[in-house]
Length: 495
Ligand code: NAD
Image (cartoon, rainbow, N blue to C red; front, side, top):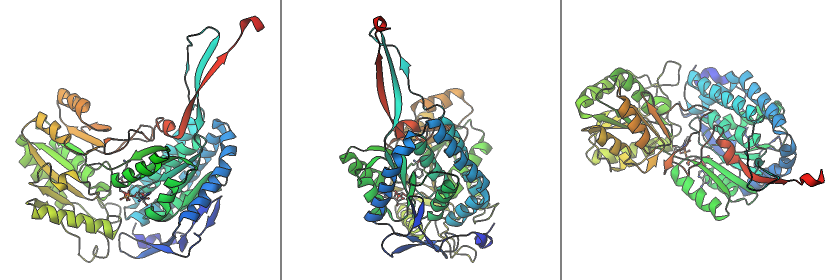
């Protein structure tokens, strides 16, 4: 489906905030333009929230939270179940919005929407559990247990790459735990967040429990991080911004969950099923235009199969279809600024001696030239400590590395400031298990991709990829709740 055919969508001219269940423009008149990544045309304008707008959203959350928390978890789960159900009923509309805002094709957007719905159902069910722990006491006539308690207001800040999944990943777990939330939408995907907010309220979510603010990171994200009424900040985005959030929110001892960048290794051994490995390497590096924290941007190949794999990759990349339609392999990157940064990084690598095997340039043919399209870029002859090997580019760009043996592959995989995901292709169980044990990553795949984690599983990274928290899965409940120890003493003589 092309963006033109999506004109039937009922989009607001200016995407508003949602505060206390009401659509509201920011107090100032300023807006941000949201452009279609496929053709650079204006999709809509976005209200530009500043400190006072964010404060008003936090006030709404503070006011709504106690009543929401007083509902039994089972009841909160029933309401969130209705939200997930409503999202399923409006799957087509949501997927069309996601496709329009990101330039990814409709089928991919449907897949992402389905993941968000699955997460909603999973978290709604957690309302019936929200387990604590009951254990023995060291003293007679005493019972000990832990119970989960909400934190209060959750500040949620997200990236644009998989917009509806990113919204669901944070909103459902935050709310099931009894928190109210303020979601700072990604400026590149404002409509997705707005539509989710509308669907949630129409499905019965009480006003004020989920508030959505639109705007820029420096203007709307920073005041949310700094608001002393916000008890937990959960952030998905770049490592640089994550570090600044850790400093700011850390200084007031707020709880912080950081899901950050990656430069993920994809290892192909000499005993691998090469056809399968190449299929997964292409998906890991280029699907979603490489805009995945879990993208496989470092392809590490054992010497014996290096030339074969390189030739297979080059051949297959030449056949990739780039565009916004179903059947295309990937679409544009999210905005012009990101594209310019990628092109500059490729240029610096080229000047440093890198060989560009494919791509390396913006697509300028009639079909693509108005959009933010980068040709799938495969690079070799780069050093493991070169800038292009160490820095995340968040685009359809992968580097190849030749290594002599498994030990070198593992060492190179770990030679990164990041540690989000990793994958190895091998038929040797010993290599698969040794890699799984020693690779420095929060998520490991064997004979699959660097991406593809499931909603009920905990996702997150080590090193510069995060701060050790895991979302979603039941582990997300630990981010959004406090444990309280309860000691119950009784006196058998008083019965
Ligand atoms: P970004 O860090 O620039 O922005 C992410 C969000 O933070 C946006 O909503 C932005 O408005 C906001 N923001 C920016 N500066 C801020 C500040 N100073 N204070 C508060 N909020 C601020 O990231 P991006 O370029 O939009 O997204 C790509 C990055 O996200 C990549 O690094 C990618 O790996 C990462 N990511 C990580 C995961 C994960 O789960 N680990 C998932 C998706 C994306």
